[in-house]
Image 1 (cartoon, rainbow, N blue to C red):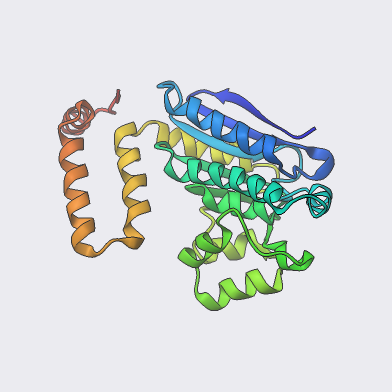
Image 2: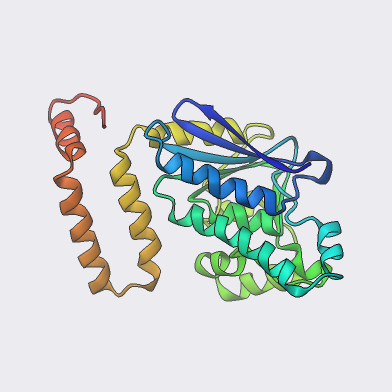
Length: 258
């Protein structure tokens, strides 16, 4: 049975996609649990970051093809509701105020690739592969994969990835600026947790501002973005953590943010 397991590693919540018999293929129960977990983390001051990982040797194979095949015999609204549930999780990740890091071992395929792209940072094993496999089974993308790739890569490369459905390596994606860290096989989770712990030492309000500014920037004019940066800067300067950070720097001491 597919489930999303939630555990704590210090100040980081670890969400593990658990469906190893089907290479961690996802379904509505995973999506609903993902939204619920992020809602809980959002209001928990002990949680500063989230890492998403797959159980075992795979990150996520995307959708369950047996379930998709069965849904072809049901009204279209059934699959539409399932996709909307997944998109709610993707949107929750993008709008979540705290950093979310994907830790990819094995492969991220289809919606699994889209899920990894929705995260703020991406750590992958050196033998991990990514594939937008939809066209290989007569389907088109979901999970925001077309949006994420189109914001990250040139049109011609995005077209090739989505139409040809060929695998692309973690190393190649790092060269293209999509993957942040490539680490040895089996080390993705620990590397992601180390990255999370580095972020956990930053002021939470500042990380939230950075995430919001990055999200808004592609659709904003320079004038609009300058105004948003001004507003965030002033708000963060007058936040208690602004005083803590400046005082610690001047005293040459590590800050201890609230």
